Length: 544
Image 1 (cartoon, rainbow, N blue to C red):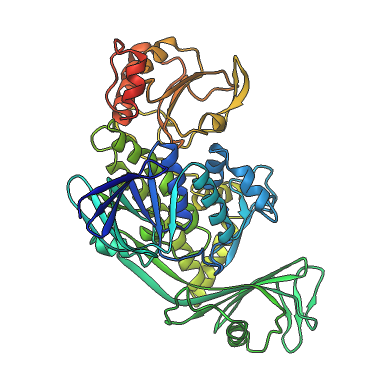
Image 2 (image 1 turned 90 degrees about the horizontal axis):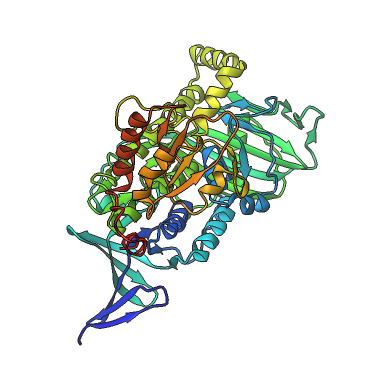
């Protein structure tokens, strides 16, 4: 049979060679968890056609992550998405108190805490991200399993097993967002060194049993056990932790155990009760469960996030030995990656741009491993020295400067990507600050400027000299002029991921600022278009 071409409603090429159809797209995303769905939306903002392939026919209802926190919340606000996430949360203004190594970082007494959390089940996070990606035009296919991958200098090909039979997808790039047991990572030959800790955590939310008395201070009185204090209780058999809110008992047990569990082995109430008995030494009456989940801790990071035209993001790239980290870091991976893939696919990426994805996000992953490894040391030690370490740590974070520093580390807000060039402004590599901006059209904010995920030159000092330089890149970047109180710089060049590529110091001389700005524009956004090129030609070039 000859080659038959068709084009679907999204402009995707459909080809039939023999009896096996071949689909052509820009980027294949393997995995429709939060990382893959966030990437799909970001790629659509970059003008790229993603195809998401997920082997599961429906989203898993197994409880996993229970919320978002730290930098990802800022990013969602910058994309105009935070309101819909807050609307779906049961408590969008939850007091900022975070577990850390079986202790707590308590920010509730700070007027401006360094990080906040948004309680939201992972299933709901996935629903919102799926909804957003489809609104932007992403193609998401469930019950489509990638069983093979090959690549050459120009394309990558995925062999897919779908409900209607096998087919192939060709694309410029493929991104593995398929979790800690990533088959894409294995097929790409990327090593995943690290450690699996011999412990199992069982987490649940149950109604308070009639025989259990909740005391005024949040402790509970249990027949046969007596009073158990809220927070963490350490025994020589493990750790038991709980908190009570509105008649719901949130509890967790941690035991040393080498059993390997998988997502298709759900936690039962009986198993949870047996674990609580082993740790506490007596039965803990449990009410009706509303959430049951089990997880183990791994500390692993891919040696490289890119192998040719195959890239990794999320759990496929890193696993952290503490809760509250993996989901946030994975979603942030995609915001860094999407615009760089878009630049390459549209043909204007400067040399080495895509390699900076590994450089920057491997660095960020290492920072996340640093604080989660520290939690392992605080959590697992059983001797008097470990108890002394926990006591010293708790005393340190009672001081506000140390508490704020830990909040920045845990919330990933301390990330400053290394930027090329010497004499960089202190803002270079950091996340763009949330500034109130006064413009000719009224009051706006830095977050509003990032809704479309386009680069922005933000002129805060009416520097016409800098705006003139940027005009040769205006087909790729937005040029905005505004005033703000206590401006941090004369101008900032902000990348689509909201990190600052370059900034001019206050009253920086024209020659110095011009050199730095040109270098940053060329280094991040490619060669300029000559000013003699008509605007229509520039617009066309930006969509090549």
